[in-house]
Length: 490
Image (cartoon, rainbow, N blue to C red; front, side, top):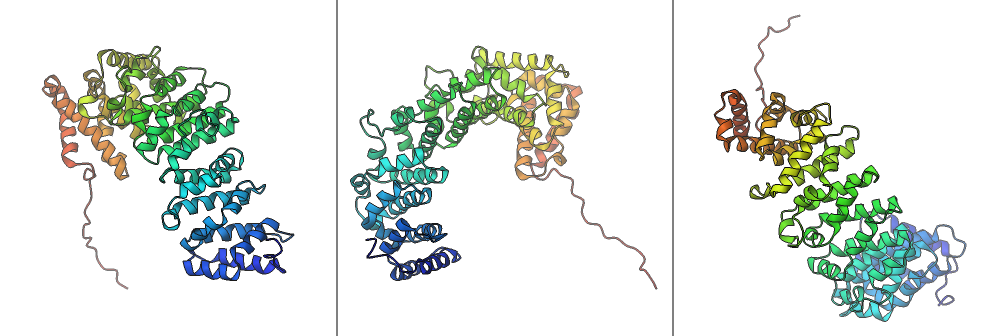
């Protein structure tokens, strides 16, 4: 092939490929066909393999072929050149390996229009092990391209059988792959699992059944490499945000592991902060209670009732002004723990958890210069808009508890800030502040003792006016007034 399809003057190809790549917008089927009529695919492949001494030729050809294979016409040619894709996946050049991975993606993306059984092609040419090799040992671009190709494979008929073999002892099983890889390789395997988990709940179910989520537990319990732990926590944060993530994550011991990180005072603050955010994200999902195994304590109650209670560190961080990011994360996590995003009938937890929450709040206050929870709240509301917004969420969840409602009422400044529409600017902020006002007002209305207290009549009236005005109409708008003045005369 080298002689038959070699070019006397590769600079012509370099110029043509560069022009093709620089064409604005996506390439059309016609433009791809026209280019390949001038430079057939074997010529391009041969030039890519030989490269010669032409500077920039490899870059131009890789970019050119990427654009060609994204067209239906280009993708239709891929099955005829699978041996070269196979070679590309093993190439020394990272650019060529990345191109080969993307070529597999293009083939799988258009496979329904090309061939009846794409999974068979992947098996016949042994491409899946090569993709995994690219995942583990390629540079960042190669690893990302490999993950994208494997994710597309998971969505096709027969693809799941390739990725999740029935024999768990097979070398290509993701669980075994992670176990014998470097720290970077293990993180990449977990990143692939996150991508696959997002494909569908059926794929997520296979991942759970294959015990692959335990790989996350192993890594976050590993105290030897903080950077790896942080990377895994970032991936776990993505996993927790997937729609069906809670259903499966809540059946694992991950909440226990996260609680251990939060509770360990010797753990680096950035790790504890991330663990708080993940716990808060998991506990905020409405289906957390339906998903948790019966033998496991319900989400928020677990954080509050563990020994020592992990929530202690969340609460301490929520009212510690020394680190903005850490405080913000902790406030949002606390808002989720106390029920801001749960249905009204599920906000209050069991007796032990509620008593632990009350004790922890008062203990934190007593150790601060504010001395009382009301002082802590006011301190939060007097900070910047991000912190204040998170504070509104905490109040929304907490105010259903009579003792906390009394703390809110004990400082007029708290009510003044919460009912002041001028403290918020964006639509989301307005809605969060309004929800906070509604929650305080509702808690008042449910307490005959407070609603009939003459000393609190002003607070009640202010809350009623704010609730009646709605989230967006509370600002006082000044209508334009005509201005009458004597005309200037020359």
